[in-house]
Image (cartoon, rainbow, N blue to C red; front, side):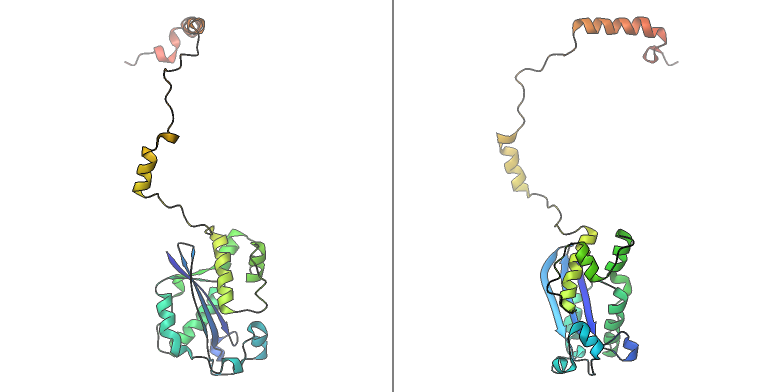
Length: 231
């Protein structure tokens, strides 16, 4: 199962207010295992970046002024995403922004039905906990030293680690041994169970057998269930 852990940084909270995506970070998982493939874009939002947003992610309009537009990277983004499940921390936020960008360039929005929200998983797994990415990383002892500010790729990598902790998938599943390996094991006598040269004798004594037969005959009598016949 291919999954893409996905995060964005933006100029604000609502695309309906004219806010735009300024960074996209994507991390690939295969069967709940990081493949090492990732993708990152800084984007020119074609507008100012409020100081409040700069305090969160550190990306200024000056820094982003020479970066590509979303229209310039949309095909590479969609090719990398493919039809994979999208794993997102607070999916509704990132999806509304990426779908606003896709709509802006005439592309079909991504379906919310293909998303997995790590906040929702955390609410089911650890009810009553705090569900921010920082708090979940601390709970699972995930290193946060590189996170002085938010960053889409860094946060996608952290979300991937949190997700794997939540679903118990940090280790790759067991693989079956190839046929030739099984044949080698079968042909190797070193670990085979050894057969006794003669079977063990009965541990019950003749006296115990006699006493048991007497008990069955005298104490249980003819009413014993195993002596009854079915008509």
